Image 1 (spheres, rainbow, N blue to C red):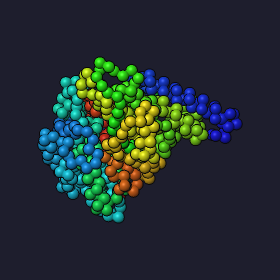
Image 2: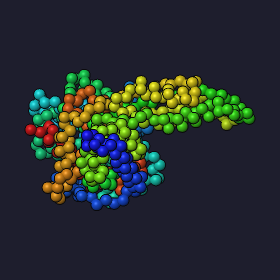
Image 3: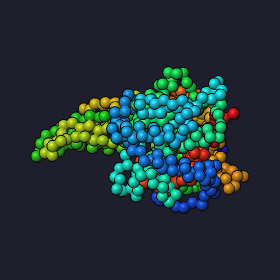
Length: 522
Protein backbone atom coordinates (compact mmCIF):
# COMPACT_ATOMS: atom_id res chain seq x y z
CA UNK A 1 0.00 0.00 0.00
CA UNK A 2 2.82 2.43 0.82
CA UNK A 3 4.37 1.77 -2.62
CA UNK A 4 1.09 2.11 -4.48
CA UNK A 5 0.08 5.34 -2.81
CA UNK A 6 3.67 6.57 -3.02
CA UNK A 7 3.40 6.58 -6.81
CA UNK A 8 0.72 9.24 -6.49
CA UNK A 9 1.96 11.45 -3.70
CA UNK A 10 0.86 8.61 -1.46
CA UNK A 11 1.20 9.91 2.06
CA UNK A 12 -0.89 12.98 1.34
CA UNK A 13 -3.61 11.02 -0.42
CA UNK A 14 -3.64 8.33 2.25
CA UNK A 15 -4.01 10.91 4.99
CA UNK A 16 -6.83 12.65 3.14
CA UNK A 17 -8.68 9.40 2.54
CA UNK A 18 -8.20 8.25 6.12
CA UNK A 19 -9.34 11.64 7.36
CA UNK A 20 -12.49 11.27 5.29
CA UNK A 21 -13.01 7.78 6.65
CA UNK A 22 -12.66 8.80 10.26
CA UNK A 23 -14.68 11.97 9.75
CA UNK A 24 -17.52 9.96 8.24
CA UNK A 25 -17.39 7.34 10.96
CA UNK A 26 -17.26 10.09 13.57
CA UNK A 27 -20.30 11.71 12.02
CA UNK A 28 -22.15 8.43 12.26
CA UNK A 29 -21.23 8.11 15.93
CA UNK A 30 -22.19 11.69 16.78
CA UNK A 31 -25.53 11.49 15.02
CA UNK A 32 -26.37 7.99 16.17
CA UNK A 33 -28.00 8.91 19.46
CA UNK A 34 -30.10 6.87 19.33
CA UNK A 35 -28.59 5.02 16.32
CA UNK A 36 -30.78 4.61 13.29
CA UNK A 37 -32.16 1.18 12.59
CA UNK A 38 -29.85 -0.97 10.49
CA UNK A 39 -30.78 -3.71 8.06
CA UNK A 40 -28.75 -6.38 9.80
CA UNK A 41 -27.44 -9.19 7.63
CA UNK A 42 -27.89 -11.44 10.65
CA UNK A 43 -30.53 -13.11 12.73
CA UNK A 44 -30.32 -14.02 16.38
CA UNK A 45 -29.26 -17.65 16.83
CA UNK A 46 -31.88 -20.26 17.45
CA UNK A 47 -32.90 -21.12 20.98
CA UNK A 48 -30.57 -22.84 23.40
CA UNK A 49 -30.27 -26.63 23.44
CA UNK A 50 -31.87 -26.59 26.90
CA UNK A 51 -35.35 -28.14 26.81
CA UNK A 52 -38.41 -26.02 27.55
CA UNK A 53 -38.65 -27.07 31.19
CA UNK A 54 -34.88 -26.93 31.70
CA UNK A 55 -34.76 -23.47 30.14
CA UNK A 56 -37.62 -22.19 32.32
CA UNK A 57 -35.94 -23.47 35.47
CA UNK A 58 -32.59 -21.91 34.46
CA UNK A 59 -34.26 -18.55 33.88
CA UNK A 60 -36.00 -18.73 37.25
CA UNK A 61 -32.70 -19.55 38.97
CA UNK A 62 -31.07 -16.62 37.20
CA UNK A 63 -33.79 -14.22 38.30
CA UNK A 64 -33.64 -15.51 41.88
CA UNK A 65 -29.86 -15.01 41.94
CA UNK A 66 -30.41 -11.29 41.38
CA UNK A 67 -32.43 -10.94 44.58
CA UNK A 68 -29.33 -11.04 46.78
CA UNK A 69 -28.19 -7.53 47.72
CA UNK A 70 -24.40 -8.08 47.80
CA UNK A 71 -23.12 -4.52 47.47
CA UNK A 72 -19.59 -3.19 47.07
CA UNK A 73 -20.14 0.38 48.16
CA UNK A 74 -16.79 1.88 49.16
CA UNK A 75 -13.85 3.24 47.21
CA UNK A 76 -11.31 0.93 45.57
CA UNK A 77 -9.41 -1.39 47.93
CA UNK A 78 -6.95 -2.49 45.28
CA UNK A 79 -4.16 -3.81 47.49
CA UNK A 80 -4.65 -5.83 50.65
CA UNK A 81 -8.41 -5.44 50.81
CA UNK A 82 -9.88 -7.53 53.61
CA UNK A 83 -13.55 -7.35 52.80
CA UNK A 84 -14.15 -4.59 55.34
CA UNK A 85 -16.02 -2.66 52.64
CA UNK A 86 -18.86 -5.18 52.99
CA UNK A 87 -21.69 -4.18 55.27
CA UNK A 88 -23.10 -6.71 57.72
CA UNK A 89 -26.16 -6.94 55.50
CA UNK A 90 -24.03 -7.76 52.44
CA UNK A 91 -22.13 -10.42 54.39
CA UNK A 92 -25.40 -12.03 55.41
CA UNK A 93 -26.58 -11.90 51.79
CA UNK A 94 -23.36 -13.62 50.70
CA UNK A 95 -23.95 -16.40 53.21
CA UNK A 96 -27.46 -16.89 51.86
CA UNK A 97 -26.22 -16.75 48.28
CA UNK A 98 -23.60 -19.44 48.88
CA UNK A 99 -26.37 -21.65 50.29
CA UNK A 100 -28.56 -20.86 47.28
CA UNK A 101 -25.80 -21.97 44.89
CA UNK A 102 -25.24 -25.22 46.79
CA UNK A 103 -28.96 -25.96 46.71
CA UNK A 104 -29.53 -25.14 43.03
CA UNK A 105 -26.34 -26.74 41.64
CA UNK A 106 -25.92 -29.96 43.64
CA UNK A 107 -23.76 -31.74 41.06
CA UNK A 108 -21.31 -28.84 40.87
CA UNK A 109 -20.93 -28.77 44.63
CA UNK A 110 -20.54 -32.53 44.99
CA UNK A 111 -18.38 -33.37 41.98
CA UNK A 112 -16.15 -30.32 42.27
CA UNK A 113 -13.72 -29.51 45.04
CA UNK A 114 -15.07 -26.30 46.62
CA UNK A 115 -13.34 -23.92 49.00
CA UNK A 116 -14.00 -20.40 50.21
CA UNK A 117 -11.19 -17.86 50.03
CA UNK A 118 -11.04 -14.98 52.46
CA UNK A 119 -14.45 -16.14 53.68
CA UNK A 120 -16.54 -14.88 50.76
CA UNK A 121 -14.94 -15.78 47.39
CA UNK A 122 -15.45 -19.23 45.88
CA UNK A 123 -12.81 -21.44 44.24
CA UNK A 124 -14.05 -24.64 42.57
CA UNK A 125 -12.12 -27.42 40.85
CA UNK A 126 -13.41 -30.21 38.60
CA UNK A 127 -10.43 -32.57 38.16
CA UNK A 128 -9.83 -33.76 34.63
CA UNK A 129 -8.74 -37.23 33.54
CA UNK A 130 -5.52 -35.97 31.91
CA UNK A 131 -3.32 -34.41 34.57
CA UNK A 132 -0.71 -33.41 31.97
CA UNK A 133 -3.01 -30.84 30.40
CA UNK A 134 -3.02 -27.34 31.86
CA UNK A 135 -6.49 -26.51 33.22
CA UNK A 136 -9.16 -24.03 32.14
CA UNK A 137 -10.16 -21.17 34.46
CA UNK A 138 -13.57 -19.45 34.28
CA UNK A 139 -14.07 -16.23 36.25
CA UNK A 140 -16.95 -14.07 37.42
CA UNK A 141 -17.85 -12.04 40.50
CA UNK A 142 -20.76 -12.05 42.93
CA UNK A 143 -20.81 -8.44 44.13
CA UNK A 144 -22.65 -5.60 42.40
CA UNK A 145 -22.61 -1.82 42.56
CA UNK A 146 -25.44 -0.03 44.39
CA UNK A 147 -28.57 0.55 42.29
CA UNK A 148 -28.66 4.31 42.82
CA UNK A 149 -32.06 5.91 43.27
CA UNK A 150 -34.28 2.83 43.36
CA UNK A 151 -37.41 4.91 42.79
CA UNK A 152 -36.18 5.61 39.24
CA UNK A 153 -36.16 1.93 38.35
CA UNK A 154 -39.30 0.53 36.70
CA UNK A 155 -38.93 -2.61 38.86
CA UNK A 156 -37.36 -3.50 42.18
CA UNK A 157 -33.61 -3.81 41.35
CA UNK A 158 -33.42 -6.80 43.71
CA UNK A 159 -36.86 -8.23 43.05
CA UNK A 160 -35.84 -10.85 40.47
CA UNK A 161 -38.47 -9.59 38.03
CA UNK A 162 -39.04 -11.34 34.69
CA UNK A 163 -40.98 -8.96 32.46
CA UNK A 164 -41.59 -8.73 28.72
CA UNK A 165 -38.96 -11.35 27.96
CA UNK A 166 -36.26 -9.78 30.17
CA UNK A 167 -34.68 -10.64 33.51
CA UNK A 168 -34.33 -7.40 35.48
CA UNK A 169 -31.98 -6.64 38.34
CA UNK A 170 -28.64 -5.28 39.42
CA UNK A 171 -26.04 -7.80 38.22
CA UNK A 172 -27.96 -8.99 35.16
CA UNK A 173 -25.23 -7.63 32.86
CA UNK A 174 -22.39 -6.95 35.31
CA UNK A 175 -22.01 -9.75 35.98
CA UNK A 176 -23.58 -12.14 38.47
CA UNK A 177 -25.50 -13.92 35.76
CA UNK A 178 -22.26 -15.01 34.07
CA UNK A 179 -21.50 -16.87 37.32
CA UNK A 180 -24.91 -18.53 37.15
CA UNK A 181 -24.45 -19.35 33.46
CA UNK A 182 -21.10 -21.01 34.18
CA UNK A 183 -22.65 -23.19 36.88
CA UNK A 184 -25.66 -23.96 34.67
CA UNK A 185 -23.31 -25.18 31.93
CA UNK A 186 -21.28 -27.35 34.31
CA UNK A 187 -24.38 -28.73 36.03
CA UNK A 188 -25.82 -29.66 32.63
CA UNK A 189 -22.57 -31.39 31.68
CA UNK A 190 -22.73 -33.33 34.95
CA UNK A 191 -26.32 -34.42 34.30
CA UNK A 192 -25.23 -35.69 30.89
CA UNK A 193 -22.52 -37.81 32.50
CA UNK A 194 -19.72 -35.82 30.90
CA UNK A 195 -16.26 -35.78 32.50
CA UNK A 196 -13.59 -33.26 31.51
CA UNK A 197 -10.27 -34.39 30.15
CA UNK A 198 -8.72 -31.04 31.06
CA UNK A 199 -9.31 -29.89 34.63
CA UNK A 200 -11.71 -26.97 35.07
CA UNK A 201 -11.38 -24.29 37.72
CA UNK A 202 -14.04 -21.72 38.55
CA UNK A 203 -13.34 -18.63 40.67
CA UNK A 204 -16.02 -16.17 41.80
CA UNK A 205 -14.73 -13.05 43.56
CA UNK A 206 -16.76 -11.04 46.04
CA UNK A 207 -15.22 -7.57 45.64
CA UNK A 208 -14.43 -6.99 41.96
CA UNK A 209 -16.36 -3.74 41.93
CA UNK A 210 -13.89 -2.25 44.44
CA UNK A 211 -10.72 -3.69 42.94
CA UNK A 212 -10.65 -7.38 43.82
CA UNK A 213 -8.01 -6.94 46.50
CA UNK A 214 -9.77 -9.23 48.98
CA UNK A 215 -11.13 -11.78 46.53
CA UNK A 216 -9.44 -12.45 43.19
CA UNK A 217 -6.05 -11.26 44.39
CA UNK A 218 -6.06 -13.83 47.18
CA UNK A 219 -7.39 -16.60 44.95
CA UNK A 220 -4.64 -15.96 42.40
CA UNK A 221 -1.99 -16.04 45.12
CA UNK A 222 -3.30 -19.38 46.39
CA UNK A 223 -3.26 -20.89 42.90
CA UNK A 224 0.22 -19.55 42.24
CA UNK A 225 1.40 -21.02 45.52
CA UNK A 226 0.12 -24.41 44.38
CA UNK A 227 2.07 -24.12 41.14
CA UNK A 228 -1.02 -24.14 38.93
CA UNK A 229 -0.79 -22.64 35.46
CA UNK A 230 -3.79 -22.37 33.14
CA UNK A 231 -4.09 -23.10 29.46
CA UNK A 232 -6.74 -20.38 29.22
CA UNK A 233 -8.52 -17.88 31.46
CA UNK A 234 -11.89 -16.32 30.58
CA UNK A 235 -13.43 -13.38 32.44
CA UNK A 236 -15.93 -10.61 31.74
CA UNK A 237 -15.03 -7.95 29.20
CA UNK A 238 -16.20 -7.32 25.66
CA UNK A 239 -19.47 -8.61 24.26
CA UNK A 240 -21.41 -9.08 21.05
CA UNK A 241 -22.63 -5.63 20.01
CA UNK A 242 -25.10 -4.42 17.41
CA UNK A 243 -25.69 -0.87 16.24
CA UNK A 244 -22.28 0.48 17.29
CA UNK A 245 -20.75 0.96 13.81
CA UNK A 246 -23.58 1.65 11.37
CA UNK A 247 -21.53 0.80 8.26
CA UNK A 248 -20.81 -2.69 9.60
CA UNK A 249 -23.97 -4.72 9.02
CA UNK A 250 -23.09 -7.74 11.13
CA UNK A 251 -22.73 -7.94 14.91
CA UNK A 252 -19.31 -7.21 16.36
CA UNK A 253 -17.88 -9.47 19.05
CA UNK A 254 -15.05 -7.79 20.95
CA UNK A 255 -12.73 -10.08 22.89
CA UNK A 256 -10.36 -8.35 25.27
CA UNK A 257 -6.79 -9.62 24.98
CA UNK A 258 -5.23 -6.79 26.98
CA UNK A 259 -6.36 -4.50 29.77
CA UNK A 260 -5.58 -0.88 30.52
CA UNK A 261 -3.84 -0.01 33.76
CA UNK A 262 -5.07 2.34 36.45
CA UNK A 263 -3.19 5.04 38.35
CA UNK A 264 -4.81 7.40 40.85
CA UNK A 265 -2.94 10.53 41.88
CA UNK A 266 -3.78 12.97 44.64
CA UNK A 267 -2.41 16.40 43.76
CA UNK A 268 -2.13 18.98 46.53
CA UNK A 269 -1.91 22.57 45.29
CA UNK A 270 -0.88 25.57 47.33
CA UNK A 271 -1.73 29.20 46.64
CA UNK A 272 -2.66 32.47 48.22
CA UNK A 273 -5.56 32.52 50.67
CA UNK A 274 -7.31 35.03 52.85
CA UNK A 275 -10.60 36.74 53.58
CA UNK A 276 -13.19 37.02 50.83
CA UNK A 277 -13.48 40.75 51.51
CA UNK A 278 -10.15 41.21 49.70
CA UNK A 279 -9.83 38.53 46.99
CA UNK A 280 -6.67 38.30 44.88
CA UNK A 281 -6.78 40.00 41.50
CA UNK A 282 -3.70 38.35 39.96
CA UNK A 283 -4.90 34.75 39.87
CA UNK A 284 -2.51 33.65 42.61
CA UNK A 285 -5.29 32.35 44.88
CA UNK A 286 -5.69 28.60 45.28
CA UNK A 287 -9.10 28.30 43.55
CA UNK A 288 -7.79 30.09 40.46
CA UNK A 289 -4.70 27.91 40.31
CA UNK A 290 -6.83 24.83 40.76
CA UNK A 291 -9.15 25.86 37.95
CA UNK A 292 -6.21 26.32 35.57
CA UNK A 293 -4.72 22.96 36.51
CA UNK A 294 -8.03 21.13 36.09
CA UNK A 295 -8.57 22.75 32.68
CA UNK A 296 -5.03 21.84 31.65
CA UNK A 297 -5.52 18.17 32.50
CA UNK A 298 -8.63 18.13 30.35
CA UNK A 299 -6.87 19.78 27.42
CA UNK A 300 -3.40 18.26 27.60
CA UNK A 301 -3.95 14.53 27.39
CA UNK A 302 -1.16 12.08 26.66
CA UNK A 303 -0.47 11.45 22.97
CA UNK A 304 -2.48 8.74 21.22
CA UNK A 305 -0.69 5.72 19.80
CA UNK A 306 -1.39 2.34 18.29
CA UNK A 307 -1.03 -0.93 20.20
CA UNK A 308 -0.96 -4.46 18.81
CA UNK A 309 -4.53 -5.37 19.86
CA UNK A 310 -5.92 -2.21 18.25
CA UNK A 311 -3.99 -2.85 15.04
CA UNK A 312 -5.58 -6.31 15.01
CA UNK A 313 -9.01 -4.76 15.67
CA UNK A 314 -8.62 -2.32 12.76
CA UNK A 315 -7.36 -5.04 10.42
CA UNK A 316 -10.42 -7.12 11.26
CA UNK A 317 -12.79 -4.16 10.94
CA UNK A 318 -11.37 -3.28 7.52
CA UNK A 319 -12.42 -6.67 6.15
CA UNK A 320 -16.05 -5.92 7.10
CA UNK A 321 -16.20 -2.35 5.77
CA UNK A 322 -17.31 -1.27 2.29
CA UNK A 323 -14.36 -0.65 -0.03
CA UNK A 324 -14.50 3.18 0.19
CA UNK A 325 -13.88 2.83 3.94
CA UNK A 326 -11.66 -0.24 3.95
CA UNK A 327 -9.01 0.81 1.43
CA UNK A 328 -7.83 4.02 3.10
CA UNK A 329 -8.04 2.41 6.54
CA UNK A 330 -5.81 -0.48 5.48
CA UNK A 331 -3.39 1.92 3.85
CA UNK A 332 -3.01 4.07 6.92
CA UNK A 333 -2.68 1.16 9.36
CA UNK A 334 0.62 0.29 7.73
CA UNK A 335 1.78 3.61 6.27
CA UNK A 336 1.09 6.16 9.00
CA UNK A 337 -0.09 4.48 12.22
CA UNK A 338 0.72 7.58 14.28
CA UNK A 339 -1.47 9.76 12.12
CA UNK A 340 -4.25 7.18 12.24
CA UNK A 341 -4.08 7.14 16.04
CA UNK A 342 -4.44 10.93 16.06
CA UNK A 343 -7.50 10.74 13.84
CA UNK A 344 -9.12 7.91 15.78
CA UNK A 345 -8.63 9.79 19.05
CA UNK A 346 -11.14 12.37 17.82
CA UNK A 347 -13.93 9.79 18.08
CA UNK A 348 -15.32 9.59 21.62
CA UNK A 349 -15.85 5.82 21.63
CA UNK A 350 -12.42 5.05 20.16
CA UNK A 351 -10.28 7.60 22.00
CA UNK A 352 -9.81 5.39 25.11
CA UNK A 353 -8.52 2.56 22.89
CA UNK A 354 -5.64 4.61 21.48
CA UNK A 355 -4.73 6.89 24.37
CA UNK A 356 -3.75 6.83 28.02
CA UNK A 357 -6.58 8.98 29.34
CA UNK A 358 -6.81 11.08 32.47
CA UNK A 359 -9.82 12.52 34.25
CA UNK A 360 -10.08 14.82 37.25
CA UNK A 361 -12.72 13.17 39.41
CA UNK A 362 -12.68 14.72 42.90
CA UNK A 363 -11.80 18.20 44.11
CA UNK A 364 -11.57 19.38 47.72
CA UNK A 365 -10.79 22.87 48.93
CA UNK A 366 -12.23 25.27 51.42
CA UNK A 367 -14.62 24.77 54.32
CA UNK A 368 -15.70 28.32 55.07
CA UNK A 369 -17.82 30.52 52.83
CA UNK A 370 -15.92 33.70 53.74
CA UNK A 371 -12.39 32.23 53.58
CA UNK A 372 -10.30 31.74 50.43
CA UNK A 373 -8.37 28.48 51.05
CA UNK A 374 -4.61 28.25 50.67
CA UNK A 375 -4.65 24.55 49.79
CA UNK A 376 -6.63 22.35 47.43
CA UNK A 377 -6.63 18.62 46.65
CA UNK A 378 -7.62 17.16 43.30
CA UNK A 379 -7.74 13.51 42.37
CA UNK A 380 -6.73 12.39 38.89
CA UNK A 381 -7.51 8.96 37.45
CA UNK A 382 -5.28 7.73 34.62
CA UNK A 383 -6.25 4.71 32.51
CA UNK A 384 -3.04 3.63 30.82
CA UNK A 385 -2.34 1.77 27.60
CA UNK A 386 -0.01 -1.23 27.60
CA UNK A 387 3.55 0.05 27.68
CA UNK A 388 2.90 2.90 30.10
CA UNK A 389 4.11 2.96 33.69
CA UNK A 390 3.72 5.08 36.78
CA UNK A 391 6.91 6.90 35.74
CA UNK A 392 5.50 8.06 32.41
CA UNK A 393 2.23 9.04 34.07
CA UNK A 394 4.01 11.10 36.74
CA UNK A 395 6.10 12.79 34.07
CA UNK A 396 2.94 13.82 32.24
CA UNK A 397 1.19 14.99 35.42
CA UNK A 398 4.14 17.16 36.47
CA UNK A 399 4.43 18.74 33.03
CA UNK A 400 0.74 19.70 33.14
CA UNK A 401 0.77 21.05 36.69
CA UNK A 402 3.97 23.05 36.35
CA UNK A 403 2.50 25.19 33.61
CA UNK A 404 0.34 26.73 36.35
CA UNK A 405 2.31 26.35 39.59
CA UNK A 406 5.51 24.96 41.10
CA UNK A 407 4.04 24.73 44.58
CA UNK A 408 2.45 21.31 44.65
CA UNK A 409 2.93 17.71 45.75
CA UNK A 410 1.73 14.36 44.38
CA UNK A 411 0.69 11.26 46.32
CA UNK A 412 0.20 7.98 44.45
CA UNK A 413 -2.99 6.34 45.71
CA UNK A 414 -3.29 3.45 43.27
CA UNK A 415 -0.85 1.72 40.96
CA UNK A 416 -2.17 -0.99 38.68
CA UNK A 417 0.01 -1.59 35.66
CA UNK A 418 -1.56 -2.46 32.28
CA UNK A 419 -1.39 -5.99 30.97
CA UNK A 420 1.10 -7.05 28.35
CA UNK A 421 0.74 -5.92 24.76
CA UNK A 422 0.27 -9.35 23.22
CA UNK A 423 -1.03 -9.65 19.67
CA UNK A 424 -3.24 -12.74 19.64
CA UNK A 425 -2.88 -15.31 22.43
CA UNK A 426 -2.80 -18.82 21.04
CA UNK A 427 -6.30 -19.79 22.15
CA UNK A 428 -8.02 -16.83 20.49
CA UNK A 429 -9.28 -19.02 17.64
CA UNK A 430 -10.98 -21.37 20.10
CA UNK A 431 -12.87 -18.48 21.70
CA UNK A 432 -13.68 -17.15 18.22
CA UNK A 433 -15.08 -20.54 17.17
CA UNK A 434 -17.43 -20.62 20.16
CA UNK A 435 -18.65 -17.10 19.43
CA UNK A 436 -19.32 -17.89 15.77
CA UNK A 437 -21.11 -21.14 16.62
CA UNK A 438 -23.37 -19.59 19.25
CA UNK A 439 -23.91 -16.05 17.96
CA UNK A 440 -23.42 -16.55 14.22
CA UNK A 441 -26.10 -16.72 11.55
CA UNK A 442 -27.88 -20.02 12.15
CA UNK A 443 -30.66 -19.29 9.66
CA UNK A 444 -28.14 -19.20 6.81
CA UNK A 445 -25.16 -21.36 7.85
CA UNK A 446 -23.48 -20.86 4.48
CA UNK A 447 -23.31 -17.10 4.92
CA UNK A 448 -19.77 -16.01 5.64
CA UNK A 449 -18.87 -14.06 7.56
CA UNK A 450 -21.95 -13.67 9.74
CA UNK A 451 -20.28 -12.01 12.72
CA UNK A 452 -17.11 -9.97 13.20
CA UNK A 453 -14.91 -11.34 15.99
CA UNK A 454 -12.04 -9.08 16.93
CA UNK A 455 -9.48 -8.57 19.69
CA UNK A 456 -9.44 -5.27 21.54
CA UNK A 457 -8.22 -3.61 24.74
CA UNK A 458 -10.50 -3.69 27.77
CA UNK A 459 -10.62 -0.13 29.06
CA UNK A 460 -12.00 -0.99 32.51
CA UNK A 461 -10.56 -3.19 35.23
CA UNK A 462 -11.43 -6.86 35.75
CA UNK A 463 -10.45 -9.60 38.18
CA UNK A 464 -8.60 -11.34 35.36
CA UNK A 465 -5.58 -9.05 35.77
CA UNK A 466 -4.58 -11.00 38.87
CA UNK A 467 -4.31 -14.18 36.81
CA UNK A 468 -2.20 -12.79 33.94
CA UNK A 469 0.99 -14.40 35.25
CA UNK A 470 -0.75 -17.79 35.65
CA UNK A 471 -1.81 -18.28 32.03
CA UNK A 472 0.02 -20.19 29.30
CA UNK A 473 -2.28 -19.56 26.37
CA UNK A 474 -4.13 -16.33 27.01
CA UNK A 475 -6.35 -14.34 29.35
CA UNK A 476 -9.54 -13.37 27.53
CA UNK A 477 -12.10 -10.80 28.58
CA UNK A 478 -15.45 -11.57 26.97
CA UNK A 479 -19.01 -11.57 28.30
CA UNK A 480 -21.11 -13.87 26.09
CA UNK A 481 -24.13 -11.62 25.63
CA UNK A 482 -25.58 -9.37 22.94
CA UNK A 483 -25.70 -5.64 23.75
CA UNK A 484 -27.72 -3.46 21.40
CA UNK A 485 -27.00 0.25 21.14
CA UNK A 486 -30.51 0.83 19.81
CA UNK A 487 -32.12 -0.34 23.05
CA UNK A 488 -29.65 1.48 25.32
CA UNK A 489 -28.16 -1.73 26.68
CA UNK A 490 -24.79 -0.12 27.37
CA UNK A 491 -26.23 2.57 29.63
CA UNK A 492 -27.94 -0.09 31.77
CA UNK A 493 -24.57 -1.42 33.00
CA UNK A 494 -24.21 0.26 36.43
CA UNK A 495 -27.30 2.25 35.39
CA UNK A 496 -31.06 2.10 35.76
CA UNK A 497 -33.20 -0.88 34.78
CA UNK A 498 -30.29 -3.24 34.23
CA UNK A 499 -31.64 -6.27 32.39
CA UNK A 500 -30.83 -9.15 30.05
CA UNK A 501 -33.22 -10.85 27.68
CA UNK A 502 -34.24 -14.40 28.47
CA UNK A 503 -32.96 -15.48 25.06
CA UNK A 504 -29.65 -13.73 25.75
CA UNK A 505 -29.23 -15.49 29.08
CA UNK A 506 -29.90 -18.91 27.56
CA UNK A 507 -27.32 -18.18 24.85
CA UNK A 508 -24.85 -17.33 27.59
CA UNK A 509 -25.35 -20.77 29.11
CA UNK A 510 -24.98 -22.30 25.67
CA UNK A 511 -21.71 -20.45 25.10
CA UNK A 512 -20.13 -21.73 28.30
CA UNK A 513 -21.38 -25.25 27.55
CA UNK A 514 -19.71 -25.17 24.15
CA UNK A 515 -16.51 -23.56 25.44
CA UNK A 516 -16.14 -26.18 28.18
CA UNK A 517 -16.66 -29.04 25.72
CA UNK A 518 -14.24 -27.60 23.15
CA UNK A 519 -11.49 -26.62 25.56
CA UNK A 520 -11.71 -29.34 28.22
CA UNK A 521 -13.28 -32.24 26.33
CA UNK A 522 -11.57 -35.06 24.50
